Image (cartoon, rainbow, N blue to C red; front, side, top):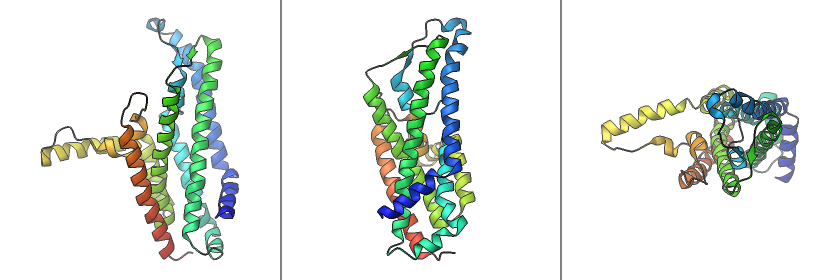
Length: 260
């Protein structure tokens, strides 16, 4: 297992999409941090705005939420690279248990996702620090530990989404479908679908106050907050259950399907 993980880490680190995506995220976060005070100074009513809290930057590592699409596309590309190059057929014959290959991919994508989040956090903080010269202000606040826990839960939710994408790419072996689903998830477009389902549940079962968004990893990423105690338990349970189900399915399908 250790050797397979090392090989996967090496392949990930040499991925052009991985490197370019990180550079784009870091660059846009830096620009946003520098530009924000300049833009706010142009707004007459913004003179009494509070300084940017470090905890907010930690809990929201992407200045533009859509940047998560870059993380997702990099993950899908990594998952499917073995199949597109024929590498998987060669390496599968050298391991005692095929599930090792799937588990290795999932472990490495966990490192991949943490790198994306950390680069996002560091670049946001650096952007805010540089923004001080442009009239901005930042503040180290007491919610930093809670923000770190929020970041960890968001990582768990992203892992749950990646488990779904791993199932599609490795189990179903359809990169196009995984890419489409990844983009839809990244844009948050499923929120409209969930609203329709909520309305249907309310009309059919006469249940008020039910929201399927409270149990969907893509929606919980944007709403969970340890500092405000919002959806914390839901997010942890959903992340663990979703990961367990789809990782198990990916392993099962990968073991029974022929390799080409």
